[in-house]
Length: 322
Length: 248
Image 1 (tube, each protein chain N blue to C red):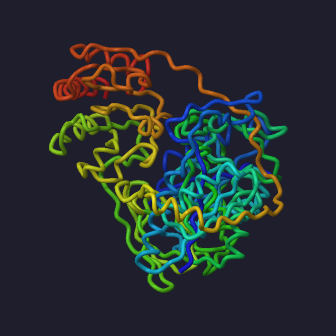
Image 2: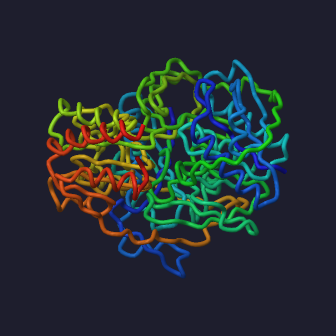
């Protein structure tokens, strides 16, 4: 009856979302008087999970799962849930988890709610709060099914340490040919840079930067802050930056702790994609730019003057707070 | 090749979001509805298959009569026929079950849905259809090529992209990239006229157990005004981000 979570990893290392999910699971488990079980796939050392309150780890080690296959991973989670008789399953909102979650939900006849923010509003009946209408509203949703699945919105709960005594158990789910109907031919990944999906800070540039040759300062600012870089839609449409950097309604959603918009006016479609970020800073020459209406901090000024100065000042700040 | 494109009828992004009936219903008063953008990329790619590879394109929506203008628009863009499942789309599983039923009766090879809709942003329907029918499934798909029974596709992953191969029948969670914004089509007069005579079949829903239920809506607390910092006082910005916002 324990709560089951899928602790996501990349190349054998847990992603941060795994710790956020574990922190969340621990808190829910305390209210419901139960324990937390995590299922991991091809992670050698799982001990880190004990720091965030996980009691039991079901360790899956299987070469066939070296590449991500949504069906196969969903099958693993389903079998882990059945083994544990879990009634509540927690998943994150990464691209992979969003991909596999509906498959798990159908196979367990579970009610599934994605983009959940905050702890359950109620456990009897079971009600959770989720974002809707591109963060312009929240919706309280009731889940009536016996098995329930929540997809936790990224960066919506936080990471809290809560040490538990961890029991590890090897788990060998049965996988079939049908689980591998989609074959990975090749993967292109940007290495050595913070990915937008994992970033806590995002530095984003818009058309106000005038041309791709001016992105050096955006990248430098991102580097000083340990941030990922992003861009507005016109910038990706003009091919100044790769499409994968486009954030907004039809691009990637961003839910960062800090989002810095430079030379971005703040079209409603852009705001829709970044609005769940916690703190927003805008730097723009036009004081009437709509972005100032949604930002927390704003500087009316020329990016070509402000950004280089900001970089220098942040370097000094970082050096003294290292 | 038979293609089914799932069309969500959603409020335009610029719409004011309000609720009625004690905050339990979305207030559609004065709201402009459009084809869900992620679905429109998929529809436009489907029309490409129609023109280049002789595919037939059917569009489907689960909704009341008020969604028909959206389906007619899809027909004006070039879809061959439309199906409306006459039901209020209560939750994603309900919608997925209805569309799965349409697929069982229609023998489609490629089913394209947007990776998420603009209204509830659930991102569940394509995956649930795949789960129900046990079809191959590709989410966040940005490119797709079909040759006979084999499919080559590209999908977006966190931090990059992945090229995959699979076979028909397949379900796609589509997004920008399937076509680009500039490839989207505005229906012309001829398209609009022809759309009037194309088939828009209305079918009744099958019954489905209710798993989740929207109880109530809330709006976010009003945001406090932006704090403006002088461009020559960047130390203050760093101070606020460090001590007040605590994000650096």
